[in-house]
Image (cartoon, rainbow, N blue to C red; front, side, top):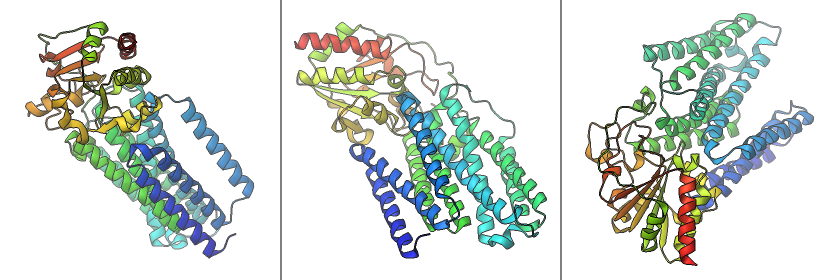
Length: 471
């Protein structure tokens, strides 16, 4: 047991680590240290909570910390940069599951295990009983939704299967789960019956998570991951209310608020509302996009000759770069260009890749300097003064139809204006459409040249050509 004053002091330190870490996450250069600070804050919060409760044997605390740390390290060390969105989705699910399990254990300890028959509301209080139900509901939805999101990102589940009367089914599951939970904690004093109703709440919540995510296409996964992250924080905050643990309430609220803010940023970046994303069906399968005319292609040698004369180059990475494991190759091209005196910058679209910040993670793996990375809002106006733009594995985020066709699925979505560069090289395996399944007129522009092939191989060839000429 620790004193109240020491608990408050340590809790304040944990909260400070959360706030400072979250602030540092807002910049690429400081994001790594911010992540470490927030992880330290969470570890401190867990230790404080367990010591404050005083009901857990120290051997279990140490064992749990070691096992959890080992699992986390193994997952991340073995993961490639292309798998980061899947890992984030998995961790979101872990967070939701942890909150739901803590709430269920509280229900078991206060209602099922005692011999006397009483309702959870009588044992815990009305507020704690209510938030217990919300914790199980939100945590279970987050768990099943995150598992399904990971499977869709991995390609295990493809397409966007539509569920008949989905809105009605969602309402039935959500309201039915709440009704089961409310009856269990407020209206039933028989422990066995109450436990059965809580199991029903878990089942309904898990199904609701599956119904929520199943019809949502891959193009919307960045938004879904942000939303699930927010839900994991809200589940933790609800658990904090059930336990009367202020530290858990604060930590969960910070995570929930940050996730909601990021979700809104992602929606703005795609010019879509959250409701439109949740309706689903966007970005699942390619649609008929018509034939291309007047497309010009070249090889690495010809492209290198153009790049040698360029004074400024902007590189636009997309998921294709991550899938080809080409981050090191693209940095080699950038280094070769910089050696010849060319200004080189990377333009990062907020929804390029499959999770917020995916391109930053991929490029940081290749140790691309932070000062070379620019957000869309910082660099978009510079394309008109740029000699060459190199698009690597990106499609929808550079598609001019977003600005010219009001009927397009991506109409109004802010894009990187690469078409304004004097010359545009697009590295792509083929003319296949992106997630939106639509034609990209950029490929037909007079100033665009296609470089067909594997992104890593093409970039390796470009780097080789440029390096040989520099020598």
